[in-house]
Length: 105
Length: 492
Image 1 (cartoon, each protein chain N blue to C red):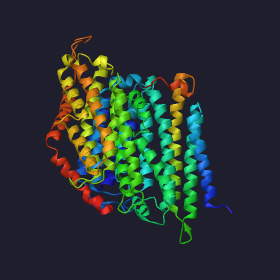
Image 2 (image 1 turned 30 degrees about the horizontal axis):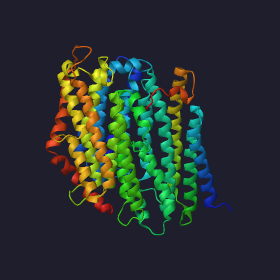
Image 3 (image 1 turned 180 degrees about the vertical axis):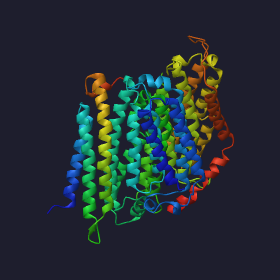
Image 4 (image 1 turned 60 degrees about the vertical axis):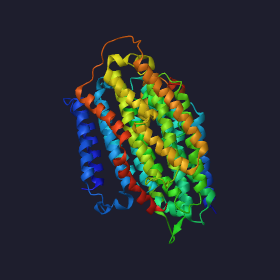
């Protein structure tokens, strides 16, 4: 039997992996994929909470509505984000974070 | 006409300007910018005349949309800052278009109106879903604005940094919202306020969610320890966009934070001490980490970035000091008052930087030397802005800081007050360093700096507002006194 805790555990693990990826990886594209993973982990937690929070035997759908908004917004964010990453590649011929560290202190 | 339809019209105007910039090359950039300014001014007038009753809203938005004094104040605030930012963009169009990809300013003129729609919508948000969508409307548009002058390496770098850290903050925010929902069973502020009072709610789950939620919002308002992006992004972004980030983005972060904190610290809340401590610790380190590094900055833009962090610290302290018996303003009202004083002085400082940039003068302290003789008016305006940012008595900045200090003293937050005093003292040092540089005699050139009459008039009006607010703040306080009643109704 899969309980709420199982879902939350997977969601937490995904979130931690995503955050670790953002901090550790040097390739901007991979960092971006890790960011998407963080959003997906939040979505999983939302759906799980919604499914196990029954009112009158039905799931509470307000959290699932947020999931749809998150997916949509993530898509918009990717559109803008990839455009910026392409601009970086054109300017620097590299998508390594080291290529954008001119400003310090 | 309801406030809601003004936002829809504003977004449509923004889209129309973006399209006109792309498909009507005959229309000049300045015309488009001034169309945007006219649009936001008309929207401001419409907002004043619009019905402020929630019954005027269409039925499909009414459950998700509040129209109290605070939300109307922040709506007007968003419109004012948008108009001023468009004015700064029109003022520096020649410098900006040199660095944009196609030599034009199309989206740079249209997107601020869409950001404004997001900020106005956010001011009325009643639940975390609306907050999330409007916050992202603002943030995603800002990714574009920050990286817009992408021929400049600094702007591109700022864009990437803002993109990655902003998206990470979004992830953290949604994750936090999920756990707060898991604990309280509701995404609306009203439901969350009920949830924190409910003894059946699992407190550790709730605190786990709150920590993530506040971390995500802390990023948006540049609160420590999530402030690392601010100096780089502010320095690299085009100057008008920096002004927008510094005032608009911060204000919209703080209205959401005000609502969230109001819900979390509702009467009988079981997490009062934890949330207050989180806010106080964050306020103390934000003031210190903003003020102390600012002392060593040589770029005025970067200095203003650190100053913006330190101001966020004062605002957090104001949020933590719940309504004080001494005056008729709640903590949310104090925050709004502080932001209202922060707007003219910041815009004025960035205006001077924009004008200088157009004349080929960079933003380092050395290049400001001799400004006092090259343009006495600009020097005077920058002096007023800096004195007010430092919090010199008789300026608006002083009253904002004083309200925060008085409220904090009433609650006896002495440790944080100590940090804030250190921060304010450091502020006097680094802001006056700028004033000293302006009036120092050694300058490389004596060539006068020219400013158009219209810009002179607007900038002088901003300086006058700083001084008038500093001497006679009563009208603004009266406007903001009403939210007290609204917050009391919410449970405080």
